[in-house]
Length: 276
Image 1 (tube, helix red, strand yellow):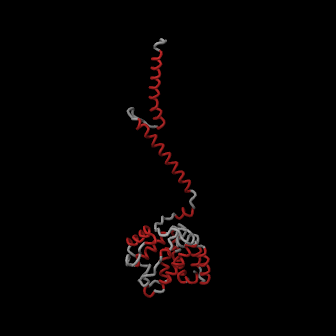
Image 2: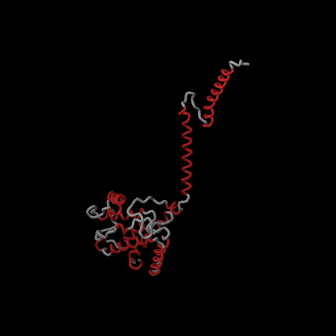
Image 3: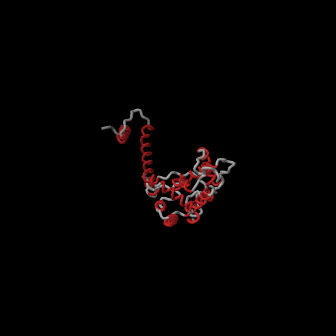
């Protein structure tokens, strides 16, 4: 037994031994928890770094799961068709239905160059077409597409076709697509017009109004067919796949529909004054 005088020192020694043992066990416990081997000389920063990385990975995992959960609420319609991001800016909201729509009326499709041979069929220089696209992204409807800026009319027509090809939802929407194809498969002219009229009712107001404006423009193009060699049939070949796309992802079905897409646009141009 220690004497009364030596008891405080003895108690201090025991406390120091316990602290030493506890401090010695902490790295062992940490190593066991992390399943890692650390050297005896590792600093405290090195010891706690794996824990920081583990906490960061858990936080990232939680954020990812929350994001995936939110994405479950995205309409399947958008997931199925895997829409591309559309970058032509211009006026984002249509005055007819407040939907995202570039709006040909606001942009002002001009009929300059109607006598140009192969109008809409001849491709413009791709780099300049991209310049037009960037101009609309940067300046919107203030973008300068005048003849002073671009002398070749095919650059402007190429940019217009590019816009329609890049629309997240085609001008002739996926919902209305089967009805338009049905009209092209019908042989009776009167029945064709009836089905087309019903199909146009399925389009959102912005799409229908833009289609009306575009068809009126293409009708004026055909009035100069002797000079530009662009008939309604030729324009249908160009604009069919541009304005409408098959909702199915089956490549063979989409390929079979190409001729009907051409017929749809051809009928819309020829009967523009009746249908709209």
